[in-house]
Length: 301
Image (cartoon, rainbow, N blue to C red; front, side, top):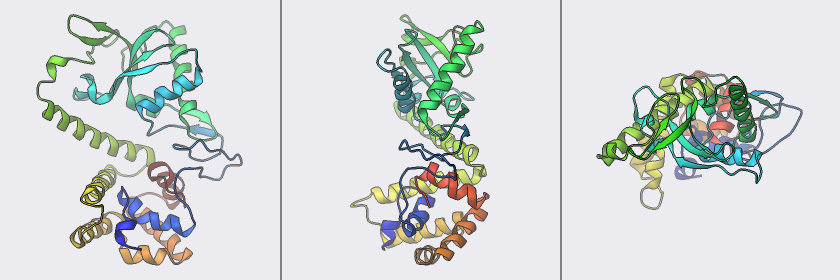
């Protein structure tokens, strides 16, 4: 197998695509040792009843899940994505998006970090359960008198469109969520958004999979480097690219290409390699094999 076929889109995918092929694994599906087998495609992680989160749910997937649980009665949609809202670009603030919430006939701003941290009970991680839990939290808030979201607008809030300023304004927080006059330097805003997305992605990996932030930053950096390498020309890596990537991979995961190739031929070598990588990145072999790989990289060993 050529090195260019091993490298996919992330640092550990490059290493573990080979490991997955040892058992014929790969892709989505379930993982973990539960007694109830379930599969809902992307985001499915295990089959034991307990607490779960949807740590990497996207804005579109969240809104689709809201529409799914509410059938054809209500159909909400995205008005502004996180990279389009002014509040997202404010230092110290989360990534905020704005939806039209058809169920309540109002516009609503929601923190992406908030919905990714919502804990729900189910047999596996899935966005439908997340949407149901979000609605239950929202109902509890309404019954307690909080009609416009959480009190300070820290997690989600109803917004109104101000036609004088051409922006959505939060009823609780007073934040503006869109301001066309502020987008004078598009290239600068794009760079700031990309930097925030990079840091957010690393923080999410660190939190969700219990690895150090420096390791998370390295994972994201190496993953982006691999994508850029494969995006050049016809997707084949030059010898120089291969050498640079191999050096970075060894520094991050503590393994060499020779280790990878050996693991593809031996089950014991594969087990040893998983343990070696887990020790290097500061997590357990079980966490690496049962959570980080299937949830983050879509690789099931």
